[in-house]
Length: 346
Image (cartoon, rainbow, N blue to C red; front, side, top):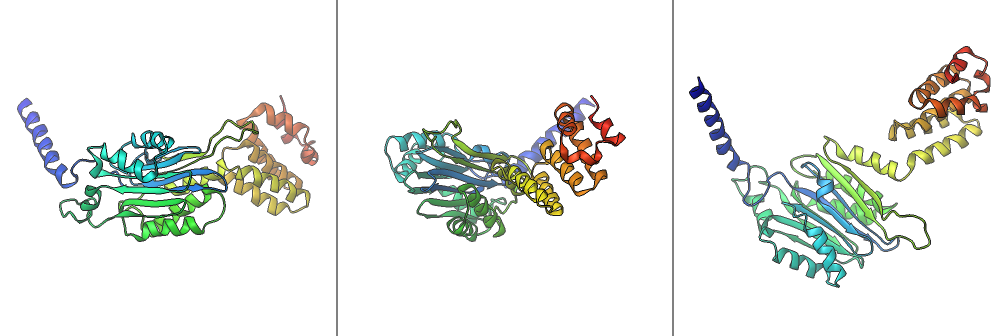
C-alpha cells in the first residue's frame, strides 16, 4: 500500500514538473506582468504612481515615491530594490535616464525587468528588459505569447506595461492622463480605467493601487506626505474598489452628507436622501451617514424609515447615537412614540 502511495506521489510530481516549463519563462515569475503610470504634477508639487496587474499585491510591489524627489514603478519580474535605489540616486543629482541605466546595469536579472523613473522636474526614463519583450513572440511561452511590452512617455508622465493587449493600452493611459481633469489621483485613476478599456493586461485583472505623495507644507500642521495610498490586493474588478477607496480618501462621503444637510434644509428631501445613499454606497459602514439618513427621513415625514435607519445607527454605536437622537430636533415628531423612546432608552 505504501509503495502505491509513493508511486502516486512521484507520478504527480513528475506531471507537475512536466507542466511547469510550458507555463514559465526564463529568469522570472510568469505571472507578474502589469501596466502602470508614473507622473509629476508641477502645480500641486505631487508625484504619483498608478498600477494594475493580474498578480496578487501589485499595489504594494510596484509603486515607490518620495516627495520632492521622484517616483518609481518596478514591474514584470519586479525588483523591489529598484525603488529605494532609484530615489537615492535621484537625491544625488542623477537624471532619471542615468538612474535607470545604473540600477539595471547593476542587476543580473535586468532582462526580466521593466522599470520607470520620474523626477521632480518631470523628466522620466523607462527600461524594458530583452526577455520581457522577447517572450511576446516566444511560442513556448503560453502565458505571454502575443502580448505587448512598451511605453509612452511625455513631459511629466510615463505610461508603461507588459503582457498587454496592444500598444493602445499605454497610449490610452497617456491620453487619459494628459487630457484629464481633477487631482493627480483622479487622473491616475482615469488613466488606469482607460488602459483597461483598451484590453489592459491580457491575463485579466486582480490587483491595483494608487500612490500620491506631496512635500509637507511648513505652515501646515499636517504630518501626511502620502496623501493617497490605496490598493486592492485581490479582486475580480479591482478598479471598482480602488475608485471607492479613492473617494473615501478624498472625503467624498463627507461632502455628500454636507450637501444632504443643505438640501434637507431647503425642503429637497428626496435629493437629500439620494445624496446620503451615495455616501453610503461609498462607505456603507459609516454610522454618521446612517444617522443622517434617519434624520432626513424624519424631516420628510417618513417616520417608519427614520426609525429603521436610526435603529441601525444605534445598533452599531449605541451611546453616541442614543444621546444625539434624544436631543435632535429632527426627531421632534417621533419623540412621543413608544418605538422611538425604546430606541433611545439608556
